[in-house]
Image (cartoon, rainbow, N blue to C red; front, side, top):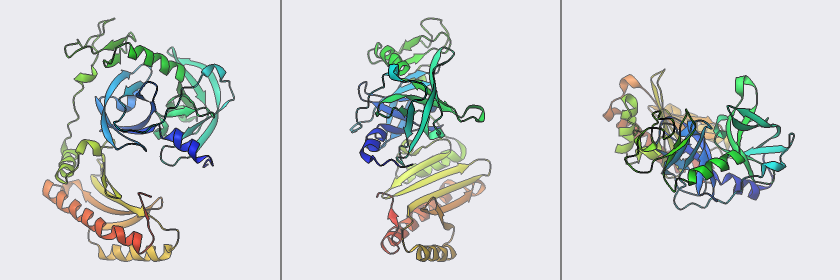
Length: 361
């Protein structure tokens, strides 16, 4: 449920960042004391840089600094010109089984609460805090909070085998890994999955071998940039042709999101069905005049060619659907240009005439 202490919620949720790569999406959180963003290794795997967005800074691309597949832990660089607050790591010595803990949604500011059921659990020598907070996949990589506002640890996986159990990497383990990482004096680090030794990329000529066991490890600097193919290449060529930074629009596999003024343009390709969908999130439904706006949208659906208005989760969406067998560079550019120009036509109309709520509010 929504917590009445809005300043408390905002200050805590402002350290949470959204992370996107061509392969996955997730969250992380900022630790000002160490000037690092902490997240799951599996979220940023196979990437040497990722796209991040948050409530106090502009969406941007930042480098990956540390990869630890053993603990499913990673560090990435913080954004430029941000205003994320300083949230401390908890002193776990005061935690007990039965203590209340919580997660806070980064967008909806909703709190999910639960209780600790185990503080001594280990899996392959990695410690975890076990709890019963109901979470969704978007909470992975994000912080678990003590009621006093400090961070207990990082959510790493939950709902194992269909059971609502949450696993959190404790703050003590995160602190230990940060301390070890900082011994590299700013060099990027990757932990060997075989012997668990942390290796640093001391220069461009560092060998891609573990300095302890000699096994081959892939340096962060050796990770290849993502190269789209097929329909994804066509879509990204479209985005570039429309004048947007392609890398900043990527949001997981076969998904892209463009910010155009006050509206969001989301593009999704469904490989199984061969359907390419362009959704323009125009505005939210008004509190009044609901019948009038429904009637207006239905009339426009009768008039519009190739585009459709719909409502999802209180958002008014203008959509374009194309099957991949009809897609080529010129066709897709013409259709999406039509989608964007039509959304411009209806944007102010829905807000000024029918009381729709701007997405910027």
